[in-house]
Image (cartoon, rainbow, N blue to C red; front, side, top):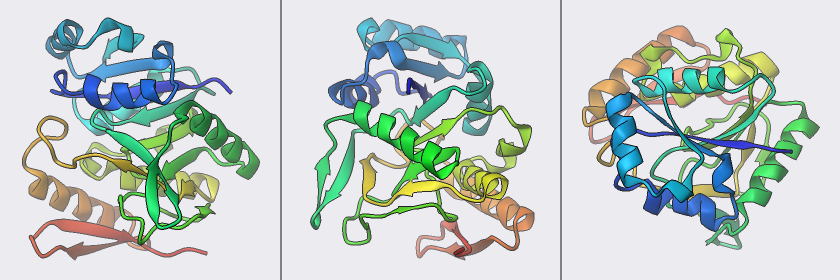
Length: 247
C-alpha cells in the first residue's frame, strides 16, 4: 500500500533535516513521499532557504496551531489516502528486542506492515508506545482504547468532521483524536513494542507555556468526555490526564 508522510512543523527549519527527515530517509522512505506543513508564508520561506531540497517533496502552508494543522492535513489529501504523520523532532524509531530498544532500520516496511494490520482489524488509526522506556513496553499489539501519541501515527484518511480534535484540546489534541477514533470505530491499533526518541517541549513546536496549555486542554477533555478522561497533577504542577481502561 502506498503512503504519504506529513510533517507538521513550526520554527524548526534548522533542526528538521538532522532529525525527522534524516530518520525517515535512513529508514528507506523516499523523499517523494514527504511533505512538510508549515504555519504561514514566512515559515515557508525560512524552510525553503534552510532545508536541503533533496530531502522532501513539498513544503505546504497550512494553518497555525497543531489541532488546526492536523485538520488541514486531512483535508489536503484525498479520502482513502494512507497518511503517516510525524513530528518534526523525531530522532529515531525503536523496537523492543529482549529488554532493550533497537533502532528500526526499515521504516518503509514498518509503515507498510502497519497498514496491513489496520486492514486486518478493520480499524483506521495506529500508533506507538508513548514513552521510551523498555521496562514498561510489551511485545503486543492492542486494539482497545489506548493513547495514540501524535509524535508518530498513521491513519486512513476519511475527512470526517466528527474525527477532528477541537482547538480547545491544543497540546493534548492527540488524546482527543485517540478518543474520537475509538468512539467511531470501536478500537485503535497500538504497537506497544515500538517507541520514538524525541525531546519533548524543545524550542519551536507548541511553544513555551506548556503548563497553561496542558491545564486548559485537560479541563476541556474532562468536561467533554467525563466517562473516559480523569485529571491528575505531576509533582511539578503539570496537569495531565488518564484514559479509562477498556476491554
